[in-house]
Every structure is written in C-alpha cells, then in structure tokens.
Length: 275
Image 1 (cartoon, rainbow, N blue to C red):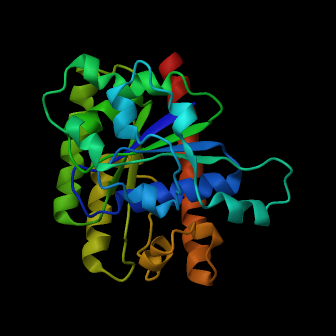
Image 2: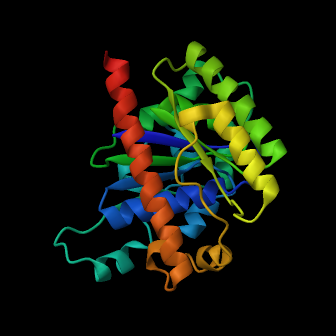
C-alpha cells in the first residue's frame, strides 16, 4: 500500500486541488484509494462529495488511535456513483474518505512527541484493501503534517512557479530530510508538482526553469496548467474526470499522467531502497 502525503508549507498553492485531481485519476483507473483529510478545514472532504451518517471524523479517530477503527468509519466519496455509471467493469470502484474536521486541530501544534506522531500510523496499520492512500495535509509543519509524514512512504510537494512558493519548497525539502533522519528513516520525497502554471507567463517560465535546476528529476511531469473552470468543478463536488468539456478532459489527462509518474517513481525508489 502506497501512502503519500500531499504537502506544502505555503498555503494557497492548490494542495487540496492536486489531492482531488489524483483521487479522480485513481478512481478512473480503478485503483482502490483512501483519502485521509488531515487538514482541519476539511476542504477535501467537501470536494469529494461526502455524505456522512454516524461515522467518526479523523480527529476523533486520532484521539482514540489504539482502539479506533478507521475501516469502519471511512465514507465512500460521492464521486463513486458517477464512476459506476461510466464503468463497464463488474467490480465496483473504491474511493473512500477519512473525513476531516476542525477537531483534528488539537494535534496541529509543534510539540507532539513520538507517541502522538504515531497515531495516524496506528490507524492505517489496521486498514486493508487499498493500493493507494492520499493524505491531504495542512499547509504547515506542525503536528498534523508531521503525523502524516510519519505514516507515509513518500511526500508529494505542491508548488506554484512563483518566488515565495519555490523558496518554500526548498525549505520543505530540507525539513523532510531532517524529519527523515530523526523520525522516519524510510520516508522519501515523491516529487514536486508545479501547479497552476500559466503557459503565457514569462515569470512562470523563468521559475519553472529555476525549479528544474534546483530539483532535477524530482520536478514531476506534467506540470498542471491553470484551469479557468476548476473552482466550478470543485464547487459542484465533482471529479474532474466526470466533468464535461474539453478543458476538463485536458485537466483529467494531466492528473492521469501525474498519477502514473507518482506510482512509477514510487516503484523505482522502492527498488533502490531495497538494494
């Protein structure tokens, strides 16, 4: 099971949008996926069209991690119904959500000890049946992000091609290395996604070239172009793969390619780590 944290230490770069795009691609590809919404704003939960009954949110599950039953409290994404209608497969697609809530914010502080950092790992250790787990992290390096990194195989960073975001990404790469050395020896960077790229912008072209020089092969292809209708798609709580129009089809293609690059890089790095 690949467990990937979607992270950025700078807010407003589209981290949750990338999480939702990858979830949409995984659903379309028939990859059983769990999205853990660890951001107290719970935007991923909203965007995934979740309709909860009596299930517990991730914050309350974390509080009782030793006895918490994550598998019994996940909720199917509202996207799944549309995927079933479009699929010719007899196997129902799986896209489940561990719901976010403001309650998880009690752990978003900088002083968590190793025992608290293991809370999400403890919950995920008892979960089966998923090939991919995507953790949508808050835009900070406080307790929740560190808890996610502890539970993850890899960290996928999201950045815009702008000065502050590129500088923040470089700081995050250093933070991952320090965290790996102290808490999570098997943690690896999954790569960097350049998001909201404007193809006609000289500044974006300059920053993309700068990112290639700074990060090399860690800068994943494709970059994600800015989409005029992205807010409309998310506002309707729809998967980009289910939204009509050529623009949405193009965006879906970006995320299909990005998901393949993410999974391929994971297999490659796993082989290197085993040697």
